Length: 93
Image (cartoon, rainbow, N blue to C red; front, side, top):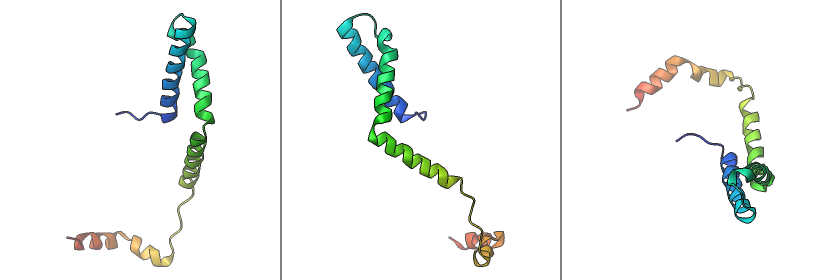
């Protein structure tokens, strides 16, 4: 399954529903109403408090990823040696 943008997915579903409703009320084809329905549904999805909270959370995660790694203290540096890793890895059964 491909990875989709959940906001875009919600927006498209809502837009097609709005376009179908416009087609039933005013006639014509669903495609004629799709552009305006997309504008309306995207505004609703972006304005929702759940979407705003998710966007803020993503921004916080992105900011934490860009932080430089913490420098090792001399105590922790002794455990970063590859021989220590190999010895500990071999001792596990």
